[in-house]
Length: 174
Image (cartoon, rainbow, N blue to C red):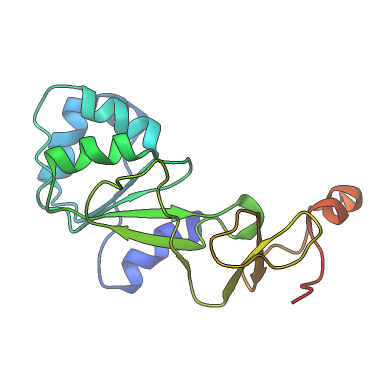
């Protein structure tokens, strides 16, 4: 996870800012630091975002180009709170299981979803996503099933844990 988080900004000609725990836990100060550092892309987990939005203080984030949520499921109500404060800053919902290189799908969101679910988006390059039934068959569009991941981002297995590896990984049947 840290590799892409650290290198992607640099590869695009940007810079990466890493903040210490004391700065992050002081939400009003954190907002000022982000604004002062002219941060254009911010990534936070939804639970922290909720706390961050609850705190009064200078949180001028209008310099952001995108805000990414990752690490936990984000709820439409939280996105509603975000867009109430920052209607012009899109949110990128980044999804991915640990076994598959962390964030493997991205959904660009420009307003709070009307329903109860937040889309996880489309897979990034070299990743395949399959919705399958309990018997391992592909589900038609719109049918609920289990999400399977294939492609270069999927791990090879759990180090020195053959039983867990066989329980979580398999050759791509598709």
